[in-house]
Image (cartoon, rainbow, N blue to C red; front, side, top):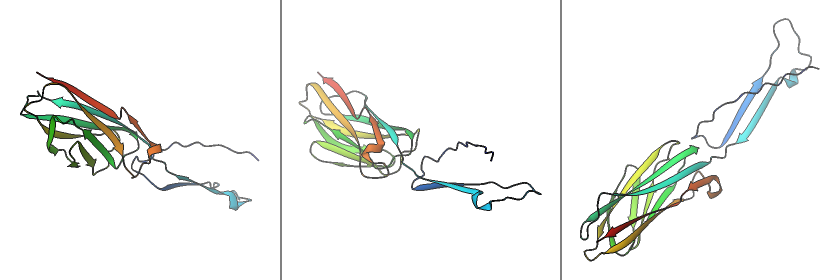
Length: 178
């Protein structure tokens, strides 16, 4: 009753979801008879649990002048190991800023009086960064230190809150207007 263990490592596609099965079959060489053919096949079935690590970086593009536009770039990066969907970035802006517009491939944004919420409509693939630029008008009477905060969220989708790690979920940019 000799046995041999064989370990096989395989890479699962980061976009894979659901259940994955792997079946192994052993057969004897010609001229041999299997005394128990009922044990020549084995299947392992597992439920895939996608996980992802997301990071958010917010930067001010250019200079800020009262009465002019200011652009903030919000960059979300997925370091894996799984693709991520349902990513939302919220830009919470102070009263000295008024939302104007956004630009970014795959992003859709909507604004309230104090917040811009941007949803990435596509999956963020492992190793990919996606940017959305949000443009505000700076109040003509703005002066002093102004903080503009962005937050990274994950809404219901492929990954649950328990399966997503958000590194640095809040990114703040402070700038001084003289």
